[in-house]
Image (tube, rainbow, N blue to C red; front, side, top):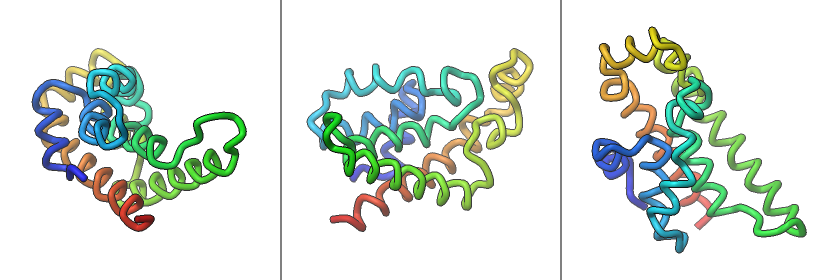
Length: 148
């Protein structure tokens, strides 16, 4: 598993956090990195820069789907297992960070021009977000490694 340092390096290259997480796991799941990044593009900035669910979480959710998800409508048990893993992941993340919504984690609403400017001026993606990514990757890897 890649670890949060590698994900942070990928983010620093210009991808959003959702893309950065899925990119580090893609090849393990026989998914090419460009396709993985395309799939995750819209999840950055709390779902299309709307300040919703943090991109670190949505990237981890994508990985959990690759690890546990269903391939068709007959695999209800796999769908249920994936939902359970995502619920557990979310609970752990929220316990560590107090929230899962980008606007709450950053303390400003990046869906507004003012909030986006504030986040940029304060360098929040460089100061606060790395900790959220670290926590997301640690929880993700703990979940997957427990099942191995």
